[in-house]
Length: 324
Image (cartoon, rainbow, N blue to C red; front, side, top):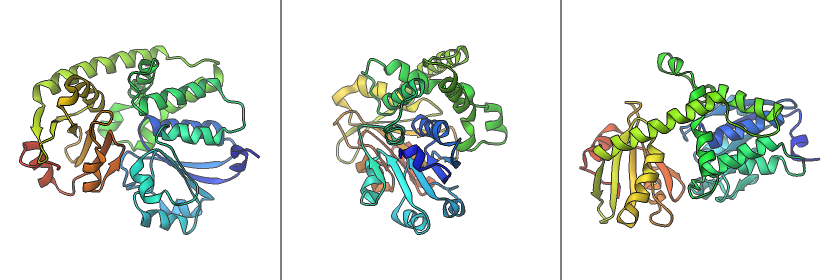
């Protein structure tokens, strides 16, 4: 019996991140599991999982986490008391807390969707289109920007926004679980009906639009960013922007090279946001030294945390406070 067959007829609560990695894990699940199992999905950017439904978890046969983990041991144990928990993730900070538990597939060399996909499809014939989508998502999420297929991987990511109903997002709000439904449906349609992955005309137009936005964001950030030294004499850049922070940060890290240890970013898209994102390059600096200090986590070169109050955020933005 393969892993897909073992999940047949099961009631599954499926939790994944709201980024490309997490959404791709959901696409994999919908393609292989939705026709035989009863799956309830929850996508969430906030790693604290504020809308996690413990009642749904208790009523399920198993709970699956991909590209995200229960935020702490107490959270995990509350689920595991009633329901088995399977985790497919590549974030070191989550593994440090929960790695000793059963059913934890961990690998820093693969994104969460790839780890889940490899486990789920072991021993079966692969779908060529879905296999390429997972490959591209893995290339993008691991930020393999020197890889020959980096441009296609980045284009897959940049095709996501063209499917979002932005009028609805701004008018009434849309959950992370709902936001990418049209993108998911479009990719499932490809996996079901064609033999080779491609970008549609709608997606190509959306990709071009995102590339133009990236260039504008880069120019705007270069004008407004601040180069600072922290209390350990490390040079870092602080900037805030409404979009394209990750791709701009990567470009800045390349430009400044060894002159820069890390980048601190704040998204001003939502005025109530208290989240800080961190980036570094290669072995230049371990960003989790900062993020874990403030209760967050992630990867060596990409992590994040949330301030507990607005006062500390304002101090950081003004340069009156450093993170270390």
